[in-house]
Image (cartoon, rainbow, N blue to C red; front, side):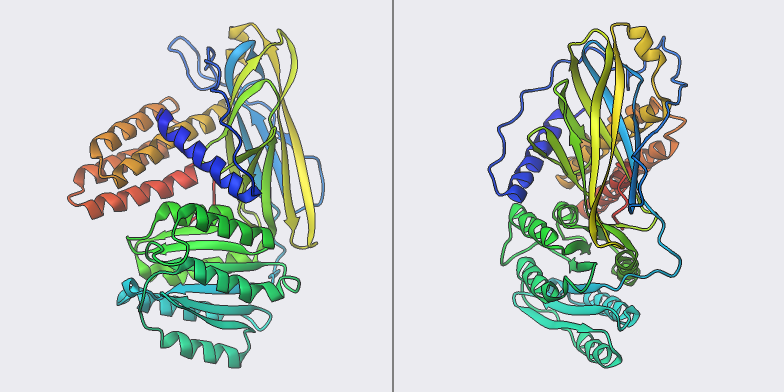
Length: 478
């Protein structure tokens, strides 16, 4: 495991959390205790395969837009230092047939000098297709930006408004630098007057490069997007071409509650814009946040592959707006130090908070995961859940894939190969269930070996990041 990478990532997450709360970050937590029991993921040669399937714990019944189910990696945990995993699945109720939520949109289009040629041509075509699909119930503000920011105010998409906007889009020309923050401020100003009228408000940002004017730091842009989300404006961040900052665009989508996209082929833009519109018009829950209570026996809690921040004894995980039938899978690693010799222990209280779009009201649901404490190591191993072990192994291997992608970006092929070998070894411990992940590693290894230029290596880094996001159970990327 690349512990240094994980610690750096955790520090960054705490910093983002501090920005969201407007307070300095808490001092770093003490290091987790040394783990003596890793039975929940590490299978010894003499151990039989885990064959048990523990019952799912489900959230209390209600009529809300979201439900939650989950379980721990075992029915027992060992006395003293040990580790366990929790797996949760959040699910949105199916959208009613024919139901379409009117939307308050801002399309924020990069027209900087680097968008010249085919990229801008494809962006114009994709924007026009989005405009054609909107109904008179929807509103759209159109913002195009280079160094300066130009705003077409929010209008209902009548035939007259549609024709005027299509003519304007067709005349867009590339010029200037990349003023993402100014464009987002203008989008927010255009959307805010209509927040009460519309239950779904979203800014769709497109950029092909790094911010070069306005706010240019990643923490500053993430803070800007987080504030918009708190105001009720979802932000999706789409990168086109090969020069944008994928970590920035992904972070903006995570903090903004929207979707991200790594679009190497600009011809796909029309498809992606169309899917963004479908996602917005089918939204059933927004401002979704998972909160995990951390009991004293849990010395360290890590939600694997997702942004999170700690507030007292609660770990908060901001999630994306969810459309009908959409899901999120969450894998959490619990580093334990149980002083009890026996008895039932509540290891995780999970609470899901969101705004139910149909009711336009706050809602929540919760579940509680418990395990028995025992000093008998054999009993722990006999009562492991085979399904959660697979989820845990997938998440651990995917962490190595993410680290490999980072090394590819730095041009360090040797370290990337080593990390991909680590991922292969981890996935191999559940080879039958994770054959798809093993195949992904093989493809990445072959692509890395065959890459003859820095551009090809960067492209494979992005492909690996796409796979990693899905492996971690998130469904908010294109």
